[in-house]
Image (cartoon, rainbow, N blue to C red; front, side, top):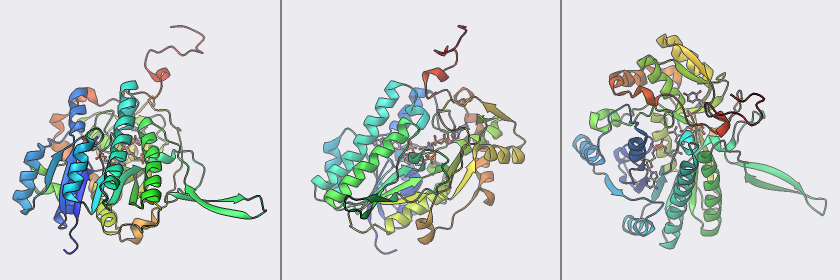
Length: 406
Ligand code: NAD
Ligand code: USQ
């Protein structure tokens, strides 16, 4: 491969970051992972764990070297709070690309209580800003790639296809002329976590304009699956598989629930439509983004990184049909529309050559095989979603306008 880059993968111990780091290393790039291991700490505090047995970072990197002969470097740094260390690292690596996965990414965790709300805002906003500010302070010129989320736009069901970042608006001026502006497509976040991703967008807008940083913001849908070509090479390289009520995402939860004999936990009617992408395509999209930095024109490149949409209900029905699992419609702990449509423009990745794997193409079986292999590790009490969006949704809470007091 030509054009090997120096790439820093922040959050490279996580579900998306780890397989991305491996994929980019395999392509010949020089990869440095940065992570503060907070995700593993949160699991310990919650009493949860990845369904798959994830090796220590040291063993992961030894396994990668054993399998491929390639070296990935690792620095344990909290990028939200250790600014001097971020400066020192960026200065020594002088990265061509920084990929930023290093945020608290669970919507339910961000809604657990005030401690988790404050942690999510503090961690995510400071992490993003420190990386941008450090690059500018050092006079570096990295292509900055951030993992954002489809959910910044909310699910209002207004029949409009969500564009890739920008909305042309036409404003009548005082002189009877009509002026066109491309504004950031309005956000309408549905959790404190999604709110931090909306706020990140303004940081990017400012640094692209003021300091001419080249920034790509990938608005990713819900990632499913667990293994990629690289993580399959050795059991010590296995990716994490979250299934608990806060960090487990819906399709992976259903696939493992079917395996361990738990009814599929559909929130409400299951009429919520969401965007999805397989982890194998996540790593391919990242490689495409690395190879295609945006022009230095003061404008953030915003790409929708998703390959298909489904309702929660249809996913549950599909999993139930193939596995015989029962479906349980449970009270929705979230404050979200019960039913919505969703249309998303994802033309950029397709124009760059992405050929996605879809649900129909058999990877659901592979994910269930992994879940079955490690089903004995399941901590059943961690399956229910107990983080609620408002106090009123907590079990046993008497609503202010209830006539009868229980
Ligand atoms: P993850 O929690 O598995 O990984 C995030 C990693 O970042 C963890 O290893 C964590 O320890 C690290 N981290 C967090 N704060 C840090 C800090 N201050 N300093 C250094 N490291 C820090 O999450 P993921 O599923 O891999 O998601 C990665 C990114 O992709 C997130 O920003 C998330 O918002 C985005 N995303 C994820 C999904 C999904 O379905 N998993 C979908 C859309 C977008
Ligand atoms: N849901 C169920 N049953 C469950 C779990 C979830 O019905 O057992 C429902 C939720 O109520 C919601 C939908 O499934 O309507 C999706 O929930 P999720 O937990 O799979 O996904 P979400 O909270 O949106 O967050 C995940 C990732 C986040 C990422 C986001 C992409 O955790 O990091 O940003 O997907 S997106 O949804 O496109 O914004």
